[in-house]
Length: 344
Picture: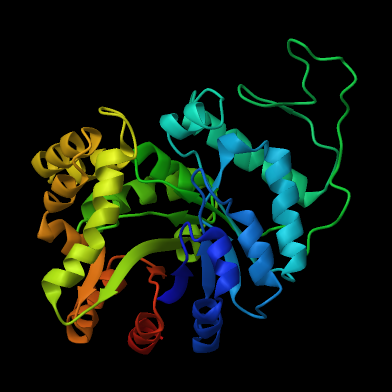
């Protein structure tokens, strides 16, 4: 199992201190990943890190597809790929209706159709075999719909990417999205992944996706890159408390009632009653109550928390679950070093 470093939404703060990334590279971490919501974007910090690293791979986890046309994403990917001498990995996701429609001002629509078309267009652009023409339900290139001038023409990416087959990952936790990731992507970026439940909740769906991909042996090369919050602390209760704000934010506040993918996942894990309490408290402004409602058992399932010995013991489940890369969400050097010692 490989290690990655998940910097999350740190954005411009990365410029003030690159010690975590530099140490991760020195220790042999495979990759470093940045994210975006509605603050800093994920791509710009990776350009910054490309100039300050030499070997560690650089991943977006994720670029929001509704925020950019497929062509813009392909241009960004090709640029980061060139700046890093072929180290870029493109992580994509659809985000959720609240951000897509509330922030980007575009319809959420059909996320599965959008994803399928988006990935195909990006791959075609990066391959540079011919000027790109595409007639899909969501995207048309050239555009010929209402308001078009009729002057659009098929174009081909001007510059050649360092790696035209750069890996594409999809962030997904819903069954249909996970199946699609296994079918059309090179890797999968799950969050709040429970290794104990992977065999029943995720792995059968992945197998279905591999089967429809048309790629022999795809399961052997597919990268399940799991984000995991790590809190190193001999005080177990304090370590658990450090994990609960993020869990309560996502399960409770990342989506509307009835349309929260993370809340749905907690239900699928068997924590439905707790998930409903977390969401009710969070959406009514009682964030402390929401955090307190996160079960310790849920924290233990989806995080690595506690003493060095406890984390070392829990790692066995992750290694056996099918996870191939562990993206460590940590903010301190001792934790980054501990994970390298235990995994690498």
